[in-house]
Length: 319
Image (tube, rainbow, N blue to C red):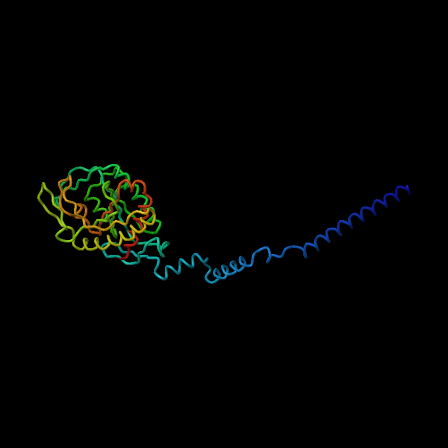
């Protein structure tokens, strides 16, 4: 038994030595780590730490991130327009090109009407004016301009503008008078009629002219109707602002020529209406003008034209 006890004592001493050695190794590793580990100020570059400190200081000022502080500053300086006025009151607020310093400005309170051209509607004489309200289908123009209008609608709505479309689908049967009435009833700041023409070489914005170029007549009824003088003056002014911004964007995006602004001089149409102005202008109570692009160009540059329309519209707001 004594030989067994002596062996057991030796084994116990061995276990204690192994445990002591393990503790010593752990202590050496821990102490070495304290002195050899890379300090945090070396792991994180000084520039990044300084930027983080500045950002934290900015947040602590008002509890807002720098992004929201900038938005609040823009709003207080008038770069974000919040106007509740429509076209009938003349409007208020600020406008600007989205390609400029107001690229992120929001334009709440404004209502814009977009009118993608053409529809298959029946012959109908309007009792008020004696004009034929009939429109006609014209493909592929109908499909092209409806798609462009939808794209422009999305861009404008992303900037806070409320957009009303005269047509809910490519084939929706909306006549010439209904196009104007839609813009009138929603209190639009303006209405943009969107068209294409295979024979036109550059983008052109047409506005209804002043007297003696301010009328439309019908060959069947013999009656002549006139554009409202106030609507005509506002249309001419805003058409110029619209085209300047619109064409600048389109030239930047596509290299297209800038085109120009022109007074309407439409002559006769197949509906029996004749005279300088476009028929829908007669019923308009809000500023009205028509954008024409080359049809082939428009078909291949739909998004760019939509962006240019949005920029043109925004340039008119509050003006």
